[in-house]
Length: 139
Image (cartoon, rainbow, N blue to C red; front, side, top):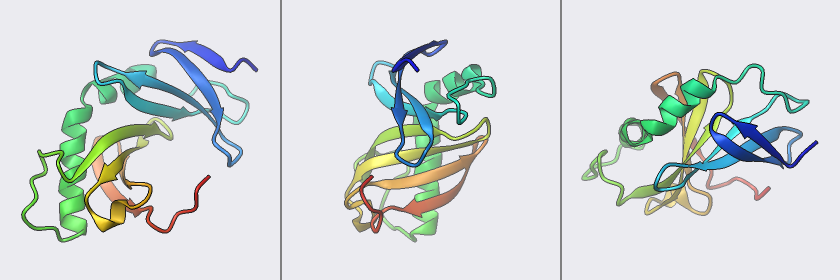
């Protein structure tokens, strides 16, 4: 298999996620936001809706606000603004399937962000869960 693939989102690099899954990875927009798409086991893209991914990447700032709102709620945070990126930042998008995807804030001032950041999972357009990575092992 080639280590790159051409897609409607540009040329993406293929990476073995270390858990038996392949991911197509790239950068999007002026900020060059990192994103990855989990591929079918054989590396296929038949079930990937690139237009949905493009739309979500184009609206990532809006989704980051929703993700921060869920973090504020779940972590019972006070005195933080969901629109501000001064407490969690460096968002990366991971697309697991058409409707399931996540935003990883790779950096932040919260203890939960150390050392790998914090993930907010989405079902479609709705932020639904927070994943604490502070006890995760490096892959």
